[in-house]
Image 1 (cartoon, rainbow, N blue to C red):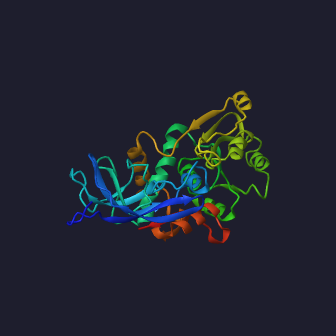
Image 2: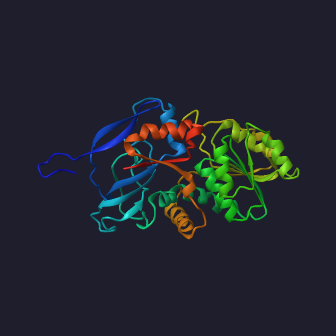
Image 3: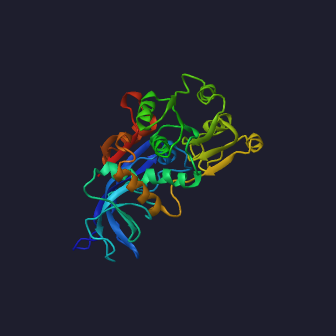
Length: 334
């Protein structure tokens, strides 16, 4: 966008300069292309899938401005098509993922975006994005009433799995995480049992809880080779393993080793899901409905709200997880 004198308007953005280091950069404010509108960002949450770029998994640096930010809400600043009124709050998707949401203004599609209420706390409706990706899995999982379920990982997504399982009638919701403060929130979200793998043997503990039956369903929300491998030890024959954690923590292609022969012998049912799908509006609108109905209290997930210019501090909290800070979902505010 240009001023009356023809000069480009500027805005702030952020990019990963090198592994473990963000920098603020000055960018030209974007203009809307065909089928696009301009959104002024309000908040962007830091997601686990943002970690690999920050931790040095990419082959070369610096990375593109805007980074990998993708969990964001903002206000419609300009919409030439008239599909949205200026001043409307929307949940972002369909934007240019080569220049993500870690910037003040974003061009995005001018149709099909989820309109958010203006009378709700912003952090609350922002969680519609992450909850929508979680609920997407449940469309594939079938009946969960009276099921014994293990959730590996109690970060923000794992906590939402725990809360959704409570809604859908699981008998045992066994939450596993090495951080005690996360397990405390897990109990608040509805876990019937919590397990710290640094304090007890997870497999033996699950065996005791289930009277030797083991888990009907194991949900992996970490994305690590060790936790994916552990899923096998927690199952019985014909169990289901839900693969939600993105396995790109050590290599960009997400290649990990799995004990496939034993998984076949046990005839496990694998459900794979990605953090966005072919119908994000349906997933996100369902999530927003759950939040507004009070089915899930998402507010305990948001541990920190920081100014956008403190993005470096935000990633240090989210990635390093200093115990004293009790970091869960870190939100950057513009």
